[in-house]
Image (cartoon, rainbow over all chains, first blue to last red; front, side):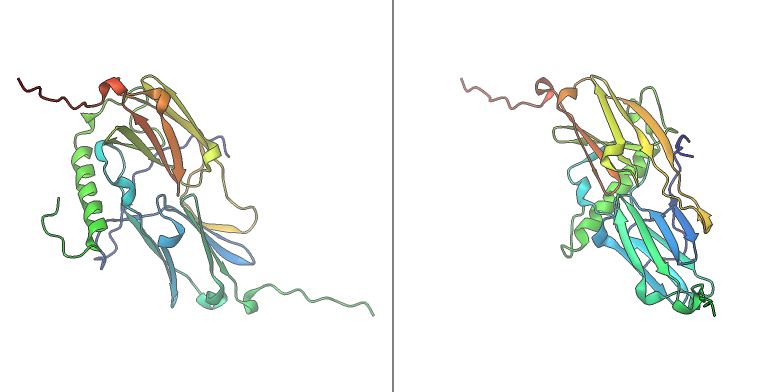
Length: 134
Length: 148
């Protein structure tokens, strides 16, 4: 698996609806994984630090928002460019939201990757019932 | 450059938008910079900027630790290579798989007036930055006008 060659992908600009904030928004690449404990979401948002990422679960919609810092570009003038720089935003609808525990979502940023863990609600966790020997 | 700025809060955004415009303008003229052996279409995409004392090469490489990137610089060539290890889990099920993992290597040509020996590199929040200063001899000098 890890011997694949990486290929560049063009960033997709967000065309969801009119943004209330200024600036350009792009759609981050996302993996969504589910096991019996939680729903995991990993999003590539290079340039975004821990302080500038917002995650929200409202009704059944998860919103990811990452703001890039422009101070990194102070005093620089482009000579040659292949990719655009902008903020990131993406929304997902979570089916059957009652299965998840919205109060205990964990989020962390590592090297520009947001990892989100939405644990399953207690009632949705598989339960094992011990059978006692008589 | 904005002529009027209403509050200091607008400033970073203004800068972003200015940058974006510049980027867009240059995207339409991709021949402005000499690219070298591996051109566009090879991971990672790069942006090259001019700074006060040289050039700055940026590349977005999310999910890669600083130790996972190798940077090699020769007098007129910069090579960025490495591997993005997979963070996929076993068991359970994937609803979406859009992120990519694997090896990469990219070489770009550098202008001749740079001092490759003084290059520095850093990685922050998944963005790699390589700075290559100009040769002392290529830096602008102030020349005093002698009065007769």
